[in-house]
Image (cartoon, rainbow, N blue to C red):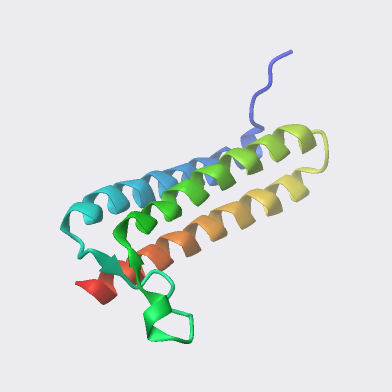
Length: 112
């Protein structure tokens, strides 16, 4: 039995993985030019809590890839269900990846 991804959701899955790779690429490149502390947690109330070591920048690709692997596993388990449900799930995955990318880009733009 072949466990392939249904055709209906191949494009959104490919887009989500591409965004994850872009997040990884930006994180690696920016790590070498970033200042020692970055405003990773810029939503916290105290200014002293907002800054973190630049190694925390790698949380973005880590969370992104873990989310992709988890969602791919769920899709494989649920692929016998409605294609609409799979489309909605993959669309949500892609949107969340886009939000991670936007968050990373905001940190990069703030600190340049």
